[in-house]
Image (tube, rainbow, N blue to C red):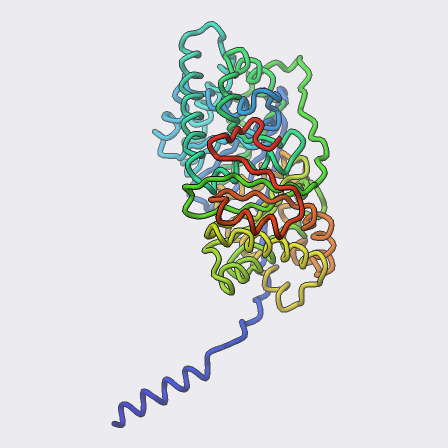
Length: 475
């Protein structure tokens, strides 16, 4: 009996000690950026080195300031396909992975890049030599059967990926969103469409590679356990003879302003077990001074389990497992997207919740009890990312690509810490207005379309999924 009473007392004491109010955020940790040194080779290649003496590995980024935004209007997917052909004939990826490093490549809207991580410092020269061999042989031969086979293989894989997209509601919504949100060079998918890929030939790839894969359009970033003097010597030795068509003027696609205008598009997919909801609109350039405010606004609205969308959509209403929202800053005004998967019949409710939260963020001030922890979360996320040489290389690459001084990396925490509730409200009202946000829903339309038509006075475009054309799906 005495044991039972003791356990009851202990349990009641523990219950009394349960905190109902979260503790205040801890003071920001100090952060010292490693010294960053840069030089430009005679051929125009910008080289950036950040040494971390005690890091076990190195990371490398070779970034070209050209991407999907540079695709011709009728050949969406050209940048991605052209970049995927690089190094196929020299087995670049296999050679680098044989060194024990990881290799990746990606085409984004504003850039194309090669990524090497977990590279032993002693293998830096060998890895870069494989990259240089692939890049310097980037003159795609229109009449070479082997090059034709490489392109055919790349295009076949891209088409397979697109066909897989068409089987998943969430991926369809993400692919359709740029067509709905933008009216400029961002108004298509990085991978293009089945029809646009059919238009791409060897001449297109040869022209794109010659025009964009050149040293004066590239940035080489090296981070980790590598002395700057050695890194620059390797860069000069490996890439110093790379010329490209430097005598030709480099023409970059102008990213025109794409005014926000609400459009509502429903992709009717009767077989979809759940609906995918995307709310989107043009938002912010990466070089905009309001970038730090955007980071805090993301943290408040949709980044993490304490964000407003997570609390409202998952915790209070049980509408979805993992709602998210963020801005993707680019050379031009990049998009804000909020993405949620939910049951078909509750898709209109989810869309309404997101729009209500956007309106609230731009019309009322966040209180200090919410603002300070979300700022601390944003700072903590940045600090955690900076623990790796890969993240350091990514941050420096982005700054360099957008023409932002590299010293901004050291100011990141200070700029986030200085954001006020008034800053967030003003930013949200200007860049995240709900009345101009577009709505894309992919799902079984018969379960939610009548409610959508009642709730939203705007015209709703309905496209059966079997008729979806990523070239003109929303015209």
